[in-house]
Length: 431
Image (cartoon, rainbow, N blue to C red; front, top):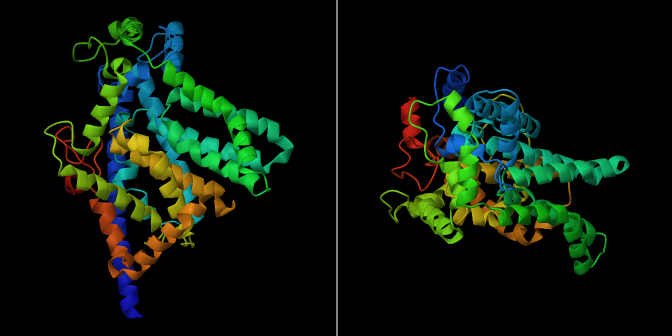
C-alpha cells in the first residue's frame, strides 16, 4: 500500500511539473498577444501570420477570402490597425477552444496532463503562426454539435439542418482543408444510420450525397476559384490605405506570403509540401522521415491512453479505447492529403487530427459504433499489444512522451526553419 501511494504521489508530482511548464508557456503567449493589442509590439504585414488573413474578394471570389472581406468592409467605415484585429480573433478563438477542451476533459474524466502536449497547442494556441486554426477547430466543434442536434432533436430538425449548412459552408469558405477532418466522419455516420434501417448500400449512398450536396458544392467552388497572380496583386493593393496609415518596422513587402500563395501552381505546391513535410525545407535530409513517423505514433498513443495519468483534479472515468482508436485512425486516413501534399505544418495539421477526433468522440460516443467496424479488429489488436507491453502500460512512459515529443511547429522535425522546437528543445528553454 505504501509503495502504491508513493508511486501515485511521484506520478502526480511529475505530471504537475509538466502541466506547470504548459502554464508558463501560456503566459508567454498571452504576454505576446497583449503586446500586440496594446501597440507595444508591431507585426509585419508580409509573413503568412498576417497576410493570410488579408485575402479578400476585391478581385472577385477566391478561396479563404471571406474573413479578409469582412475585415476590409469594416475598414471602409473606420480605419483601424487590422493586425490588432487579427490578434484579437486569434486570442478569442484560442480562449474558446481551450475552454471547450478543458470542459470535455473534465466531463470525460481524461487526464489534464495530455492537454499541454506540444502537438496539440504548441504552435496554434494564442499564436498568429497558427493563423485560422483555432477558428477552424471552433467551427468544427460547432458543426459536430449541430449535426448531433439534427439527428436527435426531431422537433427542430429543419432549424438544425439550416444552421448546420450555414456553419459548414462558412467553414469551407474560411479554410477549405477543414473538409478532410470535419465531414468524412459525419458522412460515414449518416450513411450507417440508413444502413441500420435496412436501406441498401445504393440508397444509403444517394441519401448521403443528396444531404451533403451543399457542402460538396462549396468545396468544389473554392477548389475552382483558387486564385492567380492578377487577383493576388489586386488583393494586396486593396490594403494600401491601411499599410500607409499603420506602417510596420520593415518595408512593406511587394506582396505578402499568404496572398502570394494564391499564385502557386498545383504541381509545385504538392511537391513542395511533400518535401518540406518529410525531409525539410532547408538542408533537406531523409533522416527526418523516421521522426515524422514517430510523431504520428506518439500522437496516437497519447490519445489512446488519454486518461492513463491521474493528476488528482477530478475523478478519472473509463474510456472506450477501441472506439477512440477507431476514430483517430479514421480521421488520419481521411487527412492523408493534408499529411502529404496539402500541408507541411505539423504544428497545425496534427492538432486538426487529434482535436477533431476528441470532439467527435465526446459528442457521438453513444452512437452505434458499427460505422468503424472495418477498423475495430486493428484497434483491438493494438490495444492488446499496449496492455501486454510493460513499458506501454507504465504511466511514466506517457509523462515522458508528453514532455519530449519532438513535434515541430512547421515542416519536418528540427528543420532549419524551426529554430525553437516544441518537444525537447522547448522543454529545456522553459526550464
